[in-house]
Length: 128
Image (cartoon, rainbow, N blue to C red; front, side, top):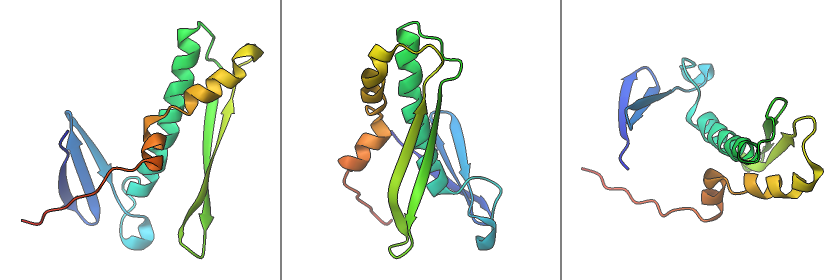
């Protein structure tokens, strides 16, 4: 799949793909704040991917999803200026069958975005 990147002004950057455009910007101290920062979208993609697997798990079993929730928290390593942990907390809906607790955890662990962090693709770049 191909993503086309454009620079609409300031420090904003957009990626166009599959008929969609995703806009990013840098935080206000760096001259932006009109859209999420790229790294924020990266974390959001992990969270929404995990959430999708939880949602589909319930939908496929006819389990009500009202009250289903997922939150993701990042833990920063200030020395390395990188994340040291990404913590996810899944809130199950009321009446969720206890027998599925382990299974929904395994389903959420199937998140493709998360899996790519454990076996990252190779990065290649050409300059024209």
